[in-house]
Each structure stands twice: as C-alpha cells, then as structure tokens.
Image (cartoon, rainbow, N blue to C red; front, side):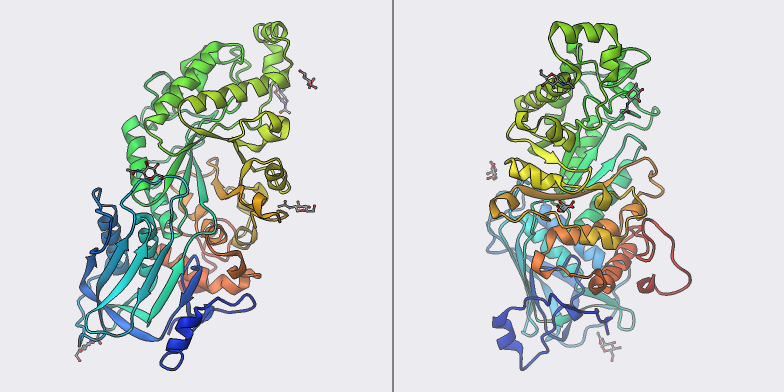
Length: 533
Ligand SMILES: *[C@@H]1O[C@H](CO)[C@@H](O)[C@H](O)[C@H]1NC(C)=O
Ligand SMILES: *[C@@H]1O[C@H](CO)[C@@H](O)[C@H](O)[C@H]1NC(C)=O
Ligand SMILES: *[C@@H]1O[C@H](CO)[C@@H](O)[C@H](O)[C@H]1NC(C)=O
Ligand SMILES: *[C@@H]1O[C@H](CO)[C@@H](O)[C@H](O)[C@H]1NC(C)=O
Ligand SMILES: *[C@@H]1O[C@H](CO)[C@@H](O)[C@H](O)[C@H]1NC(C)=O
C-alpha cells in the first residue's frame, strides 16, 4: 500500500458528481491517497488496480491537432520510458478487464506555438472497467496534454513481484490547470559554465514539476559564454575555449525546452554585471581599471546591445527578454574623465544616466519585438518612467510586488529570502510557503502578478552539484505556483510525505534530487529508505 499522507486542514475539493456515482462502489479518497506533485486543481480516485499494456497505445482521433512536429508523440514515448523506469516489463497480465490498453488524447487547438499564456489546462480520466480500457485526455493545446502525460506517469508504479506496470486507484478523474502562467527557474551560466547535457537535465526535471520558464542568465561580469555573430569578439570573455555556447547550441536548448512546454527567457544584465563584455571590446569599459557599468557615453555600448538583441531575436522566441538593470554602481562614470565630461555636456547626473541607459535599452528591445523584464532596482529608482509593458522582477525582499502592481506594472516574484536556491540555508518548507500574492488583495492587482521564479545563481554550482541544489526545493515552489491557493497546505508538514515521494521519483528518473531533511543539497541523514531522508 502506498504511504498515507498526513492530512490536516485545507481538504481537497472532490467532484461531487463523481462522489455520487462512485461512493457505493469505490472508496473516494482525498489528499491522503493522492501522491501527485504538484497537486492538481481537482482530483478524485477509486481503488481498482489496472495494468498497463506492454504496448500502451496513443490514440488521437478526434483531435484537431496534427502533431506535425511530433511534440505529442515524443512526449508520449518519453512518458512510457519514464514509467518503465529502465526496467524490463516481462510480467503477464491475466484477463483483459484490468488491462489499460492506451491513452486517447483529444487536443482541440491545431496551433502548437508555445506563446506566453498558452492554455495549459487538461482533463485526465481513467475508467476502472470496460472491455478495452483507454484513459482519456482532453486539452486545449498540446502543452496541456503534456502535463496530462506527466500526471498520468505519476499514477503508475512498477510492481517487482508481477513485473508489470500498475496503475492504482482507478477510476481517476482529474481536472487541472495552473494558477500562474509564469513558473520560472533561473540558471546562471556566467559564474560557472553548465554543459548542454546538464541544462537539458534541468529542463527535464522542470517538466516533471510543471515549471514552464527557464530563465537563462547567460552572461554576467565573470564570463560571456555565448556566441554573438554581430559582435564576434564578445565570447572572448568566456572562461575557456570550450566553455562556450554556439548559436546552434542555444537554438538546440530552446527547441528542447519548447518541446517540453518550457519557454526560455534570455537575459543580458546591463549596464552593471557586464565586465566580461570588455574582454573583446575594451572600450565598453569606462576605463581599463574601472570596468563597470558599461560606458554610458560610448555609442558602441548601445550598438552592441542592439546587435545582441537582434541575434537573440532569431534564437529566443519568447515574448519577453530580461534586461537586468540591478546593482548598478555608477562611481566609475563619475571617476572616468571622458564619461564625466559627457555627463556634464548632457546635463545628466549619475542617476539620470542610469535611467537613460535602462530606458534606451528597453526601446532597443522593443524594436526587436520584445517586452522587457527588469530587476526591481529600475522600478525602485524610476518606476514611473519605465516602459508601461515592463515586467518588474522582484528579488530584494517582500513589499515590492504590492508596490509594483499598485503602480499598474506587471511583476514576477523571486524574493531572495525565500526563493534563492543559492541560499543553502533556505528550507523546502520556506520555498513552499512563499506566497506571491501576499499583501495583494485587489483582483485587478493580483492579475498583474504573472507568477514567480526560483533562482539558481551559479557561484557555487557547476555540473557537479546543480541538480541537488535545485531539487527538491524548486519543486516545493512549483506547487505554490501551480496549485490553487485554497488547496495548498497551510502547514508544510501536510505535504512532507508527498514531496518525499516526488523526490524519490526524481532520483529514480536520474535527477540528483537532495534529501528533504537537509536545507540545500544536503546528504542523507544515515542509512534508511529514500522516503525517510
Ligand atoms: C498472471 O498469472 C500468472 C500465473 O498465475 C502470475 O504468475 C502472474 O503474476 C499474474 N500476473 C499478474 C499481473 O497478476
Ligand atoms: C497560434 O496562436 C498564437 C496566439 O493566439 C498566434 O499568435 C499565432 O499566430 C498562432 N499560430 C498559428 C500557426 O496559427
Ligand atoms: C562602487 O564602486 C566603487 C569603485 O569601483 C567602489 O569603491 C565602491 O565601494 C562601490 N560602492 C558600492 C556601494 O559598492
Ligand atoms: C539628478 O538630477 C535629477 C534631475 O535631473 C534630480 O531629480 C535628482 O535628484 C538628481 N539626483 C541626484 C542623486 O543628485
Ligand atoms: C507584507 O506586509 C507586511 C506588513 O506591512 C510586511 O512586513 C511584509 O514585508 C509584506 N510582505 C510581502 C511579501 O510583501
């Protein structure tokens, strides 16, 4: 029997219709026996066990969706591989009344573009009986169907006695959709390079936890690993010859992510955080020994930004681009005589020049079709001058998101005291409890919170430890961002067992997810079962 989840307040909403229909025949179980992560918006289950056919079929008749790029078919095949857990399914299923023959998927939109706000909802039902039992998935878009596959995979277990894949708890009726349309994870490939294979593994696990934006903080002051054809000397700022991404590499990452329903948000962090740009183009520095922020008086700075965003627009098709704008210390502008002279000529003080830089960068981004995201200092310093389409990215702490939405701008929440993964002392419980709508009560202001993002800054992570630093804490935030507020646990203890199960599932899928007992990337407490760590 599956482990029982400790339940408390905040009971699950169960479909009354199904309760009535199945009450006599089946035990209708709420939270206690639903092990899905993140918890769907609405779920009911029974108690019958089905066995997956060894050649589980994908049936798509009735779909408007033609799957020209194979997104659905590939997603289905990946899901089947995941539930097999690399094992050999050699058992014999006896009889046909308990055999799950396949999944019938009906997608109502023929459009497979992964635009921001795409409908990710789905319905998944698994009947308990029938002659030829098919699970049924209904979704507006293929991306909803991919979420349904993930949910389905979490209903399945490999039985080592019978060597078959079982699905417990039929009939299932699940209706699901995310609470927020922006559910992000930041990776930073400037402080340490991440190989393509590791970025793909991070994307895989994002799909398992239904996160949908990979914020790729590609470059920073420490290194500039990406190829920019318009300014080919920029990646001279890479750490080494091999620690670089070609344009083709970046396209590959974007395509890999999109096929899994994940958009890639690219960032250039200007005018601070950009020393590495000057390795290839030293005149971007105010001076050789005062190298940051980018020289506001040099037109080349804006030409290079234009070139980068032009090249980005051919790779990163997401409607947003991140333009940074945080931690700008303008003292090099004041102390470099040619910049100082330029400021005087233009009658600008240092803070005016910071604003000028950010706003000019925003208009370059707009020219390339992007809506801008900027870190919160831009809002804190000159919020009323920002492009009205700006999404303000909170990080310094609480209290900013309410001010941003009160000013009518959109916001993404990443307060560092709760959602910075590089802060190893922050526990999964803190990640779980961080509420993006805290202190925001007006519905029209709540709508301006696009969602949130957990941030894996790269100072102490490379390919050797990034996964265990991200997981399972990012998954705790993923449930906060996916599941309806009224269904989230008020006390994280209520979900410990369910998250532990998800953590063990990640491990079985080859993701190095750390034990729950330690805050960030800890080691197991001692000998014992995965679920107890
Ligand atoms: C089917 O029957 C065989 C023989 O009794 C048994 O070994 C096997 O475990 C059964 N399969 C399942 C899935 O129960
Ligand atoms: C898909 O839908 C989006 C959003 O409505 C639209 O911008 C895009 O043009 C559509 N693509 C196709 C191929 O119809
Ligand atoms: C700003 O930069 C200058 C020179 O680079 C440095 O001396 C100063 O401490 C910095 N100020 C802050 C607040 O970091
Ligand atoms: C800079 O100048 C603006 C007017 O252009 C003024 O409002 C602002 O207070 C000045 N800032 C500082 C730090 O002097
Ligand atoms: C909510 O409001 C309280 C009281 O004003 C404040 O201390 C806290 O920082 C706010 N939290 C957030 C996340 O905005």
